[in-house]
Amino acid sequence: MEVVMYLLKVNIVLATLFGTYWLLIRNEQFFQLNRLFLLGIVFLSLLMPILPQWQGALNDNQLVQRLSQNIADISPFEATISQEAPATASSDQEADKAKQLPQETTTTTALSIDWLGLARWVYLGILSLLFFSFLFQLIKLFAIQYERDHIPDDGFVRVQHDRDIPPFSFFKLLVINPTQYDDQKLEQIIKHERIHIKQWHTLDIILIELMSMTCWFNPVIWVFKRYVKLNLEYIADEAVLDTGINKKAYQYHLLFTSANVPSYRLSNMFNSSPIKLRIKMMNSNKSSNAGLLKYAFILPVLLGLYMFVHPQFTQAQSTEAIASSLDPGEKKIALASEDNIYILITPDIKQRTLEDISRKLAQHAIYFRVKNKNYNDGQLSSIRVQMEIPNRYKATTVEEEGEDGLFEPIIFVLENEGDEQNIFFGKGIPGNISDKGREILTQNLENGMVIQRKKGGWHMTGRANF
Image (tube, rainbow, N blue to C red):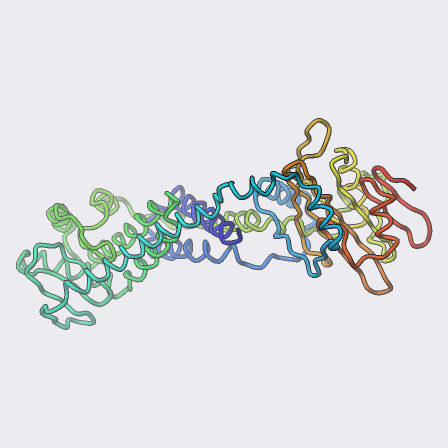
């Protein structure tokens, strides 16, 4: 599942950043800057989902906090269910639960289709086909230059042949049939392909091919690959025209050679990419420096994407930020070092009780958030709960679907023993809590929350038998 979520985040970042490129700067003539941005899209897509979560407090600005929270609300990503010291129920409890399961549960599970497993095999199968196609293209590129004339020429090697294929370059090789062109056209081709070779454009193509294999299911990647190659041709065309080559003659040459269909997708081909777009770009006016301001919009897009794929960024609020959301008349209390907190969520818990728990925990600088809760006939059937104590307990999510009529209670325990603090968040009674805590969860608390005051007194939310 972690790999699936990673791929999902990679493709969301890639599609969003490429959408920004396509909307804002695809027609700007800062071709080298565009090349860096397009390559940056690949690396940012791969790296952003695994970047560490920022643990600092948010800006106190109310607008920033509200915007951050809105982004977290629409983000489909939650914290991974990971605990430093996960506790499990006792063997007796597990045996009791097994007895309570309907007899047909095992049969149903066995007959059900593992859709995730099937999707994994489909993904790997298509990935393998694309990889073998990639290898085949490499073999074709090396085969064409085998037993041909190799002529060193100013930092590259000209591979001359007599076949009817368009000229192309691959790393430091320029493959061409010189008998097909007069001296003027041959000069234009060599100048064009020399730019590809000197600037290592083949690396861009190899990188985007590997990326397209990994993200083959994303239709955006195929459009993205086209624009990466197109921008490389823009760079080479601009460099050729800057040498003094006649623009009209060069464009007619492109039209003349466009009849040949490219055969080597891993190479830089003189007549590759849409000829009409290349000619249109050559004839358009140069971009003004004001066009550089468009690139400034990339930064807020990057920040928003980071907050979207790492929603914990917006949830790691400081004590002051959480407390500020309370009603003005409520007392703001920092997390008491001597208080014990017990929460039990069962199907009988009410929506109002969940809201009350969230509000009361906010007074103790504990972040409690409920998402995707469903009620059937007044009973809670499914829920997703996230707990976080800034700088103490990382945001952790527990989900209960209530399948086959069985709803396993969700439990949160915070107990203090001297200078040590024991925190549990999961399903089933933890084995490492105090006898008093076990009594509270099993006998005195039907659902809701109990705060045990070490200095005397109790605070209860929900149904309790005290």
